Image (cartoon, rainbow, N blue to C red; front, side):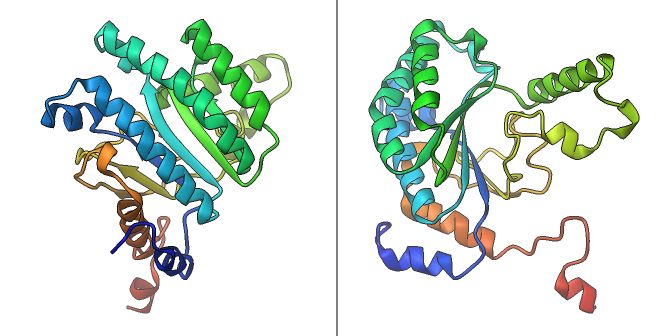
Length: 253
C-alpha cells in the first residue's frame, strides 16, 4: 500500500480527525547509529520526515500540529550536537518558509526563545512575521520548551495580573490558565504521537495533553512516513474517547 495514495486520505476523512496533533520526534540518533552514521545525520533525515507530515496534515485539514524540536533538557547534550541542531533549524526555516507560506501555514515557535543564538532568533522572527496571517494550518515548533516551565510562566503571568488588581485569584478558571499558555486560542491536543517506542510524555504540553490519545509506534522518527501517520490517525479514529465520563457501550451496560 503506497503512503501517497489518495484513497488513504479519503478513508481518513470518513472518520473524526483530531483538531490538534502533537508529535515527540524521537529516535533520530538511534536511527543514525543503526546505520553507522553520526547523530546529526539522523536529525537531517528527521527534517525530511517533518516536511512530509506537515504536508499530509494540511491535506487532511487538521488545524494544528505541534512538533517537539528541542527541549529545555536538550542543552545537556554534547555541545557539537546542540550547535548542529541550531544550524539545522536555521537552515530548515530558511528553506521551508516559502512553501509553508504559499500553502497557508502559520509557523510559530513556542518555548523560551531568549536562549536561542542570534541567527536562529532572526530566522524565527522572520518566519513569524512572514506567516502570521496564514490560517489553513498552525505549525507550532517547540524550541527550548518544557511543559513545567510553560505552566510556571503562566502562573507568574496570572500572579502579576492579580498583584496589579486586574484579576481576582479566586476567580481564576482553567480557561484563564489556557489563555496564557504558548498555545492560547488553540484546541487541546487530541492525539499525541511519540516515535521510537518510549512510553513517556517527556515534559511535553502537560496541560494541553490532559485528554490526548497516545499512539507510540516503535519505529524511529526518520522512518515515520505518510503511511505510518495514516496508521496512527486510523488508530485514533478507533479509540472511544470518554473525557472522564462513560462511553456509549459503558452507558448502555
